[in-house]
Amino acid sequence: MDANERDTLLNALAVTRERTLALIDSLSDDRLVVPYHQGVNPPLWELGHAAFFYEVFVLSALDGLPSIDPSMDDLWDSFHIEHRDRWQPGLFPGRAQTRDYFQQVYDRIAARLESRPLTDQDAYLYRYAIMHQHMHIESMIWCRQTVGYPAPPGVTENPWQRQPEPVSAGDAVVPAGTYLMGMPTGSPDFATTDFGFDNEKPRFEKLLSGFRISRTLVSNAEFLNFVEDGGYRRSDLWSFGGRKWLGTETDVALVHDSPEPISRVPKHPLYWRWHQGQWQEKRFNQWCSLQPEYPVIHVSYWEAEAYCSWAGRRLPTEAEWEAAALGNQPGRPFHRFPWGDTQDPARVDMDARLMAQLPVSALSEGDGPFGCRQMIGTVWEWTTDQFLPYDGFSVDMYPYMSTLQFGDHKVTKGGSCATSSMLIRGTYRQAYLPQRNDVYTGFRTCALQDS
Image (tube, rainbow, N blue to C red; front, side, top):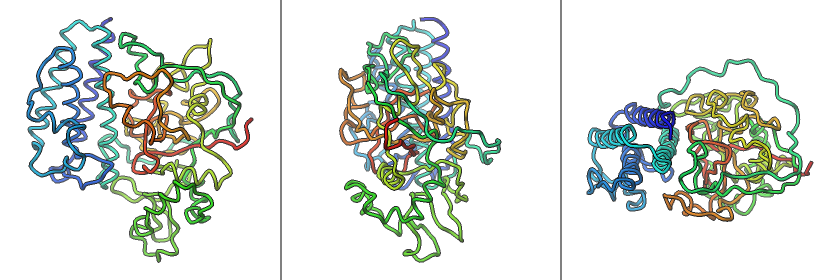
């Protein structure tokens, strides 16, 4: 393996270290102790867990090295400690000790990468551990949104100022045909540019009927029409699962501190409120005027499904989404991104910079082969599919990356504004429970009739 691959991995490791520490160092000691919430973890536990993963799946797997502090292994291992116990006072070391542990592990990984021959197997394990950590970087970002902390370092405070970008009217038409789905099967000795998690493999062919899909994400303005038309109160728009989810939501929780009587304020997405005569949206620790042209975010699968029922539309299947985003077909060059096969963060809203604060018509440079916009980044997009293995699935080096989520989760695609761009490709599959609305989820719709 050439020196370029070593340099690429060293750079990825450095970027990952910098981003992780910035998320920790920008919090005061009192803010490291976040309130309990089932969708987040304490930031210091995230830091220790990331280091532990490198120890187990790189240093121990390749060299048989013991961990720096074996007495802590069960506490950093997400499968040996209950989620609620991660908040237990006095059980975990403080900022300085956890940060020191993280740095020691990172220094060992960097030294090993610089000094040892770089085999394909080693490169795969390095990349796997780095990608795993970027998943936790995203969860550290949505933790700040959940508990109402200030935005993380690097998030722009300036509103979108570019001129409106033209987007063709109507749906994109995806013709009937055979499309390629997923990444190639292989042992860890394939090129790391073809890296994919086990749930993305093996690649297969899928015959699709023609369909029409929205060129843009559903906007705040479009979703507001559903809200103000009483969409949350019309049981005929909601499936059984959706009605059950609605029963767990309360007007009080959704209204926040609106001065209006509860009965007069329609239900709405988690981080919206009606306040002083206008709709507002919470962005970390600030309430901002709801921007109609921005994408709707923090909506559950059930909300997306009900909106589609109201609008006379439907959600795409996973295969339809991937075909619309990539257009990969047998006998043609394979693309991992809508614009081609080269990663280009400048084309997308990712890496916690814009945080979905841009029009759904923006970023035309990221358009896919059929003219769909923002299919990579901005929001995780709900699909109708359950998160299940592809035929021929085999477990990867980390047996819990996929298997624990098969069956009761929905597939979302494309990554979000909080996702790291080095993690995502069009074949990537993210599993979320359908009730999740604390994460950066949104959607686009398909026409009911095939093209």
